[in-house]
Image (cartoon, rainbow, N blue to C red; front, side, top):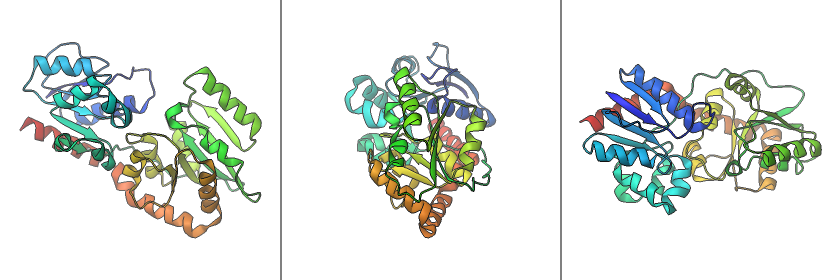
Length: 316
């Protein structure tokens, strides 16, 4: 098939949505399809369209549906779609109706859809390449948080939690990710001056970010909303236990019975979990076992097979 893969994220962006589009294009090409990745549909004929983001890709979705009403149109729903736009934005809602199939990136995403839409939705977990776990630092208990500094990520919750740790704690925090604006950069710099255990290293190449993640003893994801975070997938692949805000997107990735959740925005609760993971070997081992049980979700072959099955379904 000739597939138009539309993502509003520009090629220079290092966002999760851009990473998903690039990875899906590679997997689809491995399956024998011809794939053109673009920020907007150019109007040229295609056998199918795969679009990321219901609101921001709506123009491409609407024009393709009008031009080729009988051809497959697959819409992958981002976190912004699921937990914001489809509740309030008319164009995002219309994109849901126009799509032949919907894709969510974790199981709990289905609950955000009306029953009539849920029937045409499929769950496809994101994959990542093998990440080799490296020995952690012996001198301290290193905790990593990775991702662009954006309000929706609540990026400084880990930094705020450091001040609530007990005196014996050896926890230090490493923050990876570029600041999306000047106030975020200034906030990160203020936290480094205020809290000696906190280090912001900014945006680094993806390989370097994975190496820092693989060395950490824990990874924290403190977001307000997530569609199915790439960094969770990477931590699972690296065998790094996760401490996560209890929001739908994280629960969909880690499971409802996961032991490492804290209430969103609560740095005191986060600090208690961090200290428990550092000081209680049985609890830390429990987090590792639970994450290891979810690691199969991160395998590229699983994601490729899910895409193959989805395209066969819509083609039929």
